[in-house]
Image (cartoon, rainbow, N blue to C red):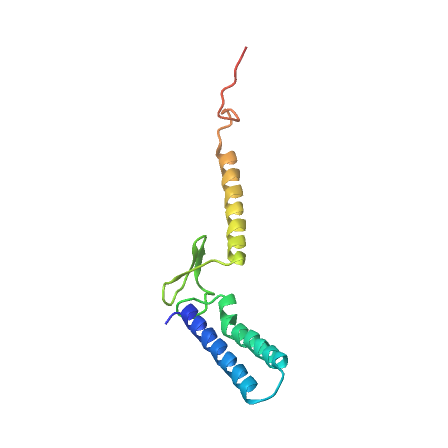
Length: 129
């Protein structure tokens, strides 16, 4: 089962379990509803955050392995374990944009140094009146 499907299933069962527990506590006791609902919501937030915390890290969404040694491109990272393509994060896109800008600058420098000295500076021929 894929990591994302597993996280969704666990989160769903946590929500169902906490809701059933809260309803059971309210039905069997004479406690006011707001404190019980507050504790249930706080429990849900902590539990779902714990289950989904791996999704914020560089882990494969299919197998759960680390993507530290993955090959990244603008389309995502390829897991070295299961070869699944994972979506890129903002940090990886920023690194790719910086690397692409450096490559373009280097290509422009090489093109300008490799240009013939007798060639015009632009592709538009000079017009003489």
